[in-house]
Image 1: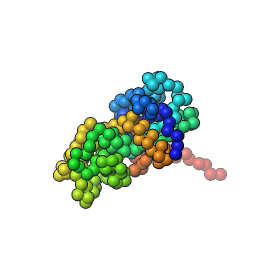
Image 2: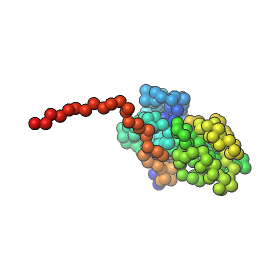
Image 3: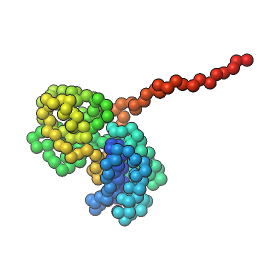
Image 4: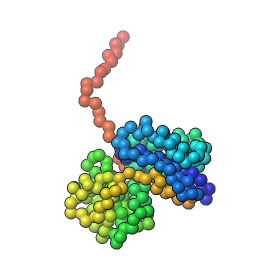
Length: 240
């Protein structure tokens, strides 16, 4: 099994925030900065990382592992976090472990709460379109479904097919509820952004077991691209 690193750097810009943390594995202590930030992560992320390293009282060379959210999430924000994590990984010659936004939110909730008689935890986050990113987890954090980009009805149908009572978290809970008012999920409203501390702990656990995810982005749909409606210029070629 890989040797457990002493310090872990965690980075997240996949959703409407910007977060960084240094996790001291042996002391079980985290130095973190988390800010809600729909845009502007590119300017803030590296200074936040530097601040966390300074708070921990270490040098960058002491970092043995990097954790980064790989999606799903905002396309631009996701690329900022991934490119920064990979750059640090190359510069420090350390592994980069990917953690999905959905599992980070799930493990954050389950580290502080039980499902209290419910069968599954449903994590639902915004796509900024008509559908949702969602995934279901068991009380031990195990994945009960694959991550998906689907409408709210698909998640409700899945729960009903299993006969499951679910707890629901994520930044899309309000919209989900408005679109499927007949669901009976218990809604929790406090879990909107991935915790970099939880990300670091998930990454260490997976890395130590030899089960770490790579840093390839988890895209559940193609990027939104539209053709320009402006008339395109054509360079006339003179034939001889």
